[in-house]
Image (spheres, helix red, strand yellow):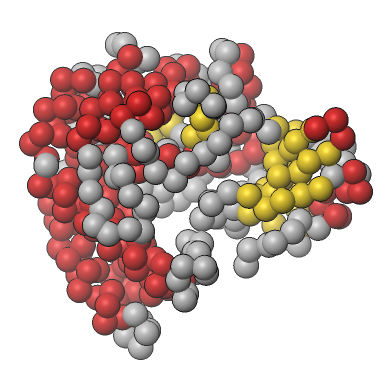
Length: 346
């Protein structure tokens, strides 16, 4: 259940509640986020984490953001409690406070210039973390475990025959399960420090249109680069909403994003990694479509917009349809995408 306001007993671990006003912000599907405004125009970001994130995730965020800041990158930083802790537990949920980075986020990329700026920022992020000696404390099982997500979708089809959306979801889900047989095995590629969720709404832009920092760092991990960037490109290069059909890949946005990335990462990647980017993009589109389709029936994970949909299932079915469209379009443009990834990111 989402929260409209954060309780004063939580805020009191960091500051006097009476001195700070709060406003629920963000379009995140997972965490509850509040902007706290206080003395001297001070601003902080308070978050209640989803139960999928262990408290140890804050140790990872603290270590990585210290490294990023030491190398001159703008990044939100954890604000310790009055007792010096990185987070607190209230009613079995983890809460934390982060420093506020001014700027704005967007839900879709509106121009090649925006895609280029996003690529440049993520390239700097990857370059700074290359060689960073750190082992992550918080490990989320199942992240980009595509076989697991396929199993979850198949199980939902077996168990949810009486669901109100079963007849609408089943044909889409069955098509996705068939397409999984065409995926390439990427397990021979190296794992790199990764953000783990590079959708465009997790980038902050300034008034000039430059991308200044990455947020929502709970997914920091080591990951194969084609999956990390495949997730970025499926978000950045689809000009519409994540739930608007038909999902489509814009090659102009893809070209700009890769140009921006290549400009800040000379010599970083191996040829076999860039050559597998299209395969990573296909896998991410399929995986995410499966996750949305499963939650259309399970209705227990992704958030939803009650102003636009009558239920969680309906919103996730729309997302699944749009992501399936995007997967189909990527496959149709696969040859052109491979040429771009080899020439611009190689």
